[in-house]
Image (cartoon, rainbow, N blue to C red; front, side, top):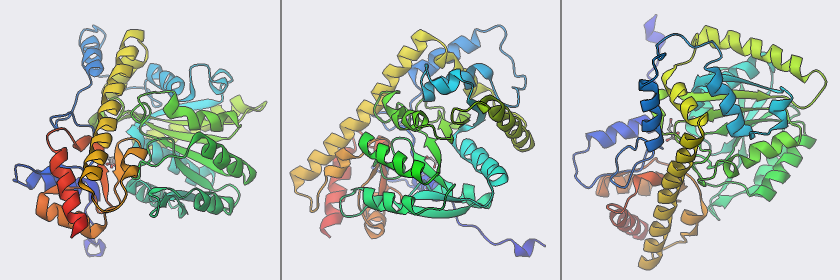
Length: 404
Ligand code: LMR
């Protein structure tokens, strides 16, 4: 009976969000959840999203009908082009199948579920650390988890040798989860040269890449640059899959817009392989969510399929990534100016939504207690939570806790 159900721990990110909300201190700072904030610490509806919503409101054919099982076709095909490149041979050769999902989480889950069913007995390798949710998503579908070194505590950059060494020893066929850009939680990405090496080792060892793409365009402000690693791996002929989210880059967090893509290597029967894979994904999707939510996909589709709106989106991406990069610069100079013990170059070396500060769990808890600054226990800060009003306060709080 119900007595056998143990109490589960609270979700670390959403728990932190609730604690922040309940704090009545006026200078409190939220650096927890990875969601963009403007310079007034407010959620930002992208101007392009407002325009796209206007288009939808004025569409006489707008309705609330079910989408097809695999989702809105205009959205999934434009999403393929966005991540793989408009002139991708994989698209031309019909070596890609795409299913619209409950954003990135749903895409990772659908991929994990598919692999557990059709590629049984394989382990998945995660970067250490990785997004906390990866662990429970793969555990829930009974895929065995292993990790590869990723973050070097010493350099606060990539432990490239450790990573390659562990990946190189993985059993043939193992799944390797890779963050295509703006690694969560560390903000540390391989360089293009390093991606080439990773790809080489993975090819030799016949490993299966699973890309998590949650920050395309949000990291550098350039949609193509942020998709470079995925496109390179596809050029190398890998069979792989991609979880794609529009939560951050279109700010559609609660609308749950995303896609799962499965890409096969070039071969004479690639088209039939893809068609079989698509048919199985449809069964999994139907049994889990029947069909995906329509609104976010319609908004995204309006943006992706209209040249003027797409250009506006690129501008909005530069606004978000530009403000974050600026906050990195300001934070680093403030810490340098104060002579805060330690080195702080990693604040500006890291990229995307997060910075892995190197603060210890003890320091994180102290800062929360003393200064009402909320960040995850691993010392990750969501850069978007910083702004010109609170960055000085935050820098001083860090300086104080590091000196204690
Ligand atoms: C985060 O890591 O803060 C975000 O990706 C939000 C989430 O769903 O965990």
